[in-house]
Image 1 (cartoon, rainbow, N blue to C red):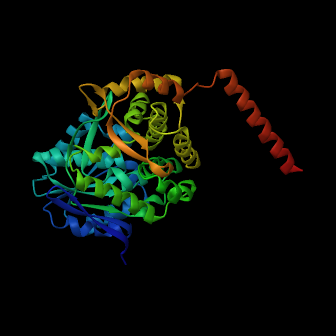
Image 2 (image 1 turned 45 degrees about the vertical axis):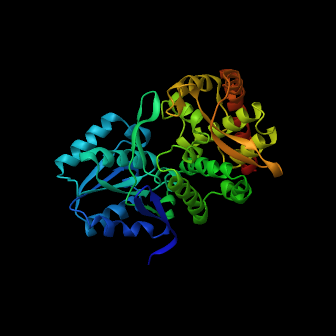
Image 3 (image 1 turned 135 degrees about the vertical axis):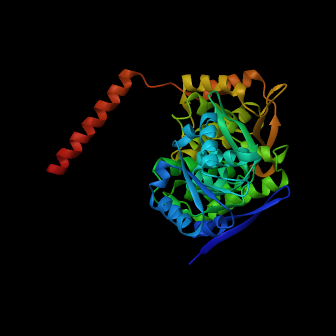
Length: 389
């Protein structure tokens, strides 16, 4: 029996679609897909191998004209122009038409790539997002921002192409690796930082192993509301880029593999608040509050010095830059000891340079790494000895 926590009506320009969050949401995928002449399921091997992935595929095989299961490389490797071409050829060979449907089953990388494939194939076909990660449920699958990466820039080639529905079923998170759950918490932290009262509300959840579906629904509703006010990111929707300018630089510096998106956003959030403090927009206590929550969620606030410097160079390719350089999304203090967040904020180069140096954690030397390893081994032997006694 379907028991939805919440059905959020989303509007993007003239397009309307439901965002369904809760137990059983994905059960509706078959009925949605059956309205089309052919259906392509776009996913990755890791997701298709999970119990949830198998259930969604089986439902489409039973209830819809499933013509193709297209498998993308895992993670950001599936978001490239080469993979876009491979996917378009696969759709063509499967007989997909303008009346066909793409079902994106996966995390943020899959929904980005599959959504962009749907946006560009035959100048646009319909698609449904079935996010399987926390990051996808609270952010990536909502709002119709679809894209692939270039080697030096995240999401540099893309289109606004909202889905027909977003079906976010927390059952998909049950077999998610702990690192992926933490990565999703990076985006949850972004929403909390946009509304500082949520730092306290979300605090216990950020430290927990799993999140209450109501937290997922709260984040989803926040994004839906912002997107409705600004469908194509000309104004308020830029707020959703909080932490993403430096964060995307960190992702690119790690070749889109060393850091997950949520980990990079976490570092970007710490960077944004430290930059704002350096500019006198907020006090150091605001940055400390954000970093305290990041630590509780097991997320990083620092990167090695060489990564920070590379991220700074790669920010030059960020799509949010203007003629006068980068424009930042930064907090500013308001009455009551809280802050609001503003977009298109200028920051002088010296402040950015100083913050890059501040956010950089020196990489451990080989000697210190060996020393730490020997200490860990010694503790392990001691514990083993006590257990034997």
